[in-house]
Image (cartoon, rainbow, N blue to C red; front, side, top):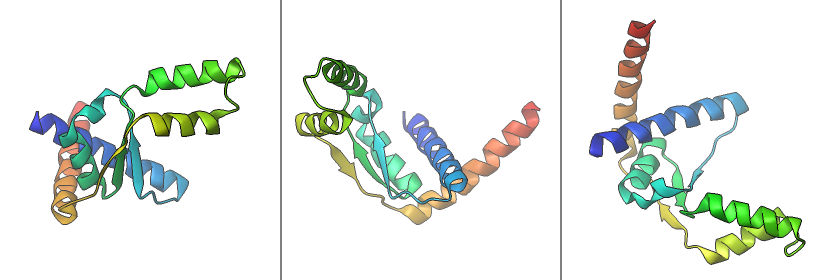
Length: 123
């Protein structure tokens, strides 16, 4: 499991780098939702690899989103802003702060070298 979590965290870093480059914007927090956030190791590794704070929650984001849209359509809540406030009060969010970022940056550089070679071999 350790290798899988490390690989996912590195992939998240790569995609975050691409997004930040394309948008010319720097993010300091990543919001993770869904079943994967049940892995505290994955959440912490993501914070470490990206250098960003991770806000993890809710686990059942898809279900909450579906319910929120239905409630808006039925007029039971005003809008998406109100829905987000309700969800935020209903589910605890766990926060993970980056640790060992220099070590993770070096590992990311190696990850990029290895994955680049693999992509070249597949071409």
